[in-house]
Length: 151
Image 1 (tube, one colour):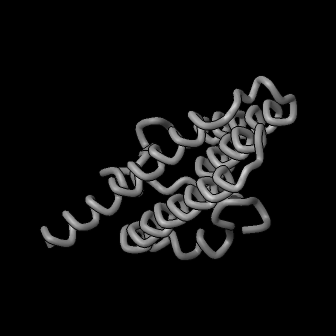
Image 2 (image 1 turned 180 degrees about the horizontal axis):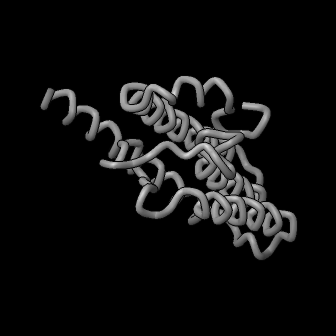
């Protein structure tokens, strides 16, 4: 049990590190979103969606790692009624705004790596929820992972 828990935590925190590392690189190699009106609009949409999500998922329940906090509860209203990982969607929109300032191959590759990392985080979190909460299977069947009504 201890070995499994340590591996799970190591994996989870590695994904968090990779997520923040990729975000840092993307932010540091691109222009400001304030230089491109379309980028700014996309960023504001992503930020607004993230704030809307936090209305339903209180900070005490929120976790940047894919590990489930003790006494966490499943949220199925607000943005969570349509997608299981609305904060990842919000983050992807905001970073899409960043790379849209200058679409280059390295931006696209880094953004795709970020999508992979967030997908792995989501998968890990969902695996843990499946073991933790029997209602999660039903919830998972009714919602999309990242993009409302699509994916």
